[in-house]
Image (cartoon, rainbow, N blue to C red; front, top):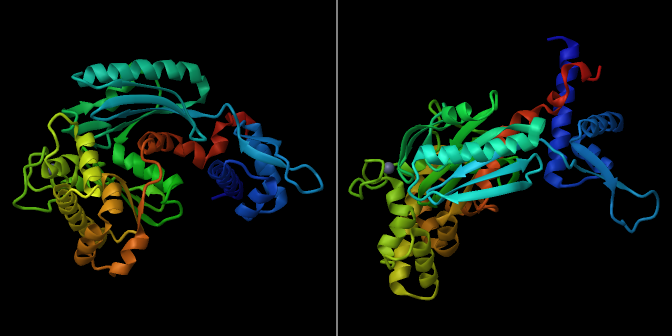
Length: 398
Ligand SMILES: [Zn+2]
């Protein structure tokens, strides 16, 4: 390794750390940034200068500080930032948007999934993405798609029973339809949400983070030192099909007694005898509300579901021993409304001390957009790691 290589790498690292610090904080003074990075004022001035030249940062006058002396300025992300085009395919609908480096969601659109086949859905995504790519020009870093189902590392949706998609080559199909050379990534929705939670939510600076989501089925994601653990085929974190009840119901995956057959919205609606006219989400919400209002039947349904949640949670704590568990969807509601049932069973199953559980389990802060933003995070990661890559080779400062 030559010393010039080392210097260039160090510079990239400092550019990356500075950019991410401003991105997280929203705005910072130069002095705050220098302190946070623990570098000299000279180095900090160079780094800020580079990021301003790249258009990634701008320096603006801060609001009145009330202090005397020189007016301060603040660093913020620039207005014309690099962006990813992201789509999210769920059993309800397909969403598409442009997400800037600063996580601003722009130009968002959606369509109901209805009875459309995968080809029609992907044609819609390709058409919508093509328009956004043309608008962004060189600022576009690629297209990332989050899918509610089992996605392998080749971008094939192997099995999405809730969408009735099996063996759909989403990545290849989009690559053929989009301008040549457009980077395309396809990932599982819970994994994408986990990644976002690890970068910007409860999982920042956490060693091992487990993300658990229950809605129409159960999803999970495992992030270790800021990186998504994908496994050999891309299936790591598929906790919904962990077997918890050998005499339980048949699952849509074809096996019996999977965790999601006991703890998703349908399991709760089945136990709570919700009116058939309601969709699964509305049915689950109505049972949760009725349990809070004192209905004994609804309370029993919620507590039974909470106990099965605790069973799986305790086993996962034993296997993974995460620093933190982030809950979303129905899991976050059960944790809030039936905390004692979940915690008691999880503690009984887990080798960890019961008192240790509460501090390690938190509720996700951004449940609506986490998966969409996580897909953008994935596409933006190379740029965040090496902001200087935006420079054309000839312009790299000596
Ligand atoms: Zn299953």
